[in-house]
Length: 88
Image (cartoon, rainbow, N blue to C red; front, side):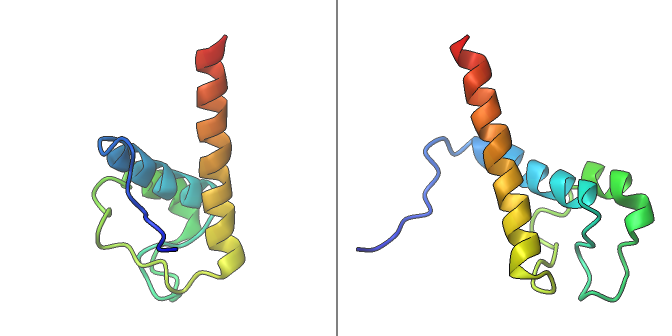
């Protein structure tokens, strides 16, 4: 069975990408460099705010599977929380 990574709501891509960078910054993960420290965690708040401009240029390859999974898991938690807010 072939998997599909198609977005049900294409307009959500921008928000999900922004969340990805914001969450990585909250977790203190350096994005954009090859682990050289080019994105200092001291400026994690600013990094998260810059997420929209780094949508295609950020490098995630130097992060561990656990770190990447933590970001994805937090995105899922936030999506579930938003959906639950809409139910009540």
